[in-house]
Image 1 (cartoon, one colour):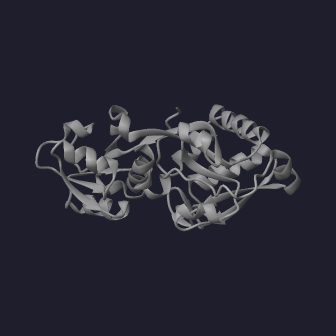
Image 2: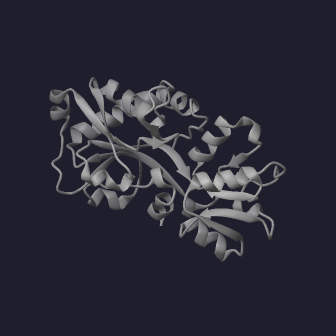
Length: 256
């Protein structure tokens, strides 16, 4: 359910690399002098091919590569589910799930808490959770998402969308009263449109089905590479690098 919930948020989906791809060990990464990252070239705030605004995934990827003493190579993928067709080493924002331990990838320590946030129009100061929504409010949801099913079961008036950007645009226009959306997406919108008056709440804190942690997904690499990435993440968390990167895009850093 968590993987499905994240999948409808597009770029925050848990992804698996193709099981037939050969693993790249730490020694191979060091000998090559580079580690590669799969990313979407048009998915801000997550990633983009804009040199002045690359997205937090790419900034984090660069910081990880620097900590490993190698360069970052970018492999562009659209959509994210095509990661299995690209021979890249890592994919950020991979959901921590016990099932992944038995799959074709390994995951690092979790580095960020996420889930389905609640975006709101001005005048909704008392609303912090999905349960605070008054009857009759129009709430945008991603079509066929877990959030959609959960809110429908509670009798909430939901409006399905295929894209989060369209949902937030309608919220800003006043066509919706609220929407269930990824926190990074709404945070970046508020950051880029401060006069919109929109705000958001980390409503997933009260909804276990809509909350998860994310990590670095690595192809079936050796333990040495996983451990090196874990050590690098720990340093980036301690020195404030991760918090700073997220802040560049208006996104809250919520350490697991």
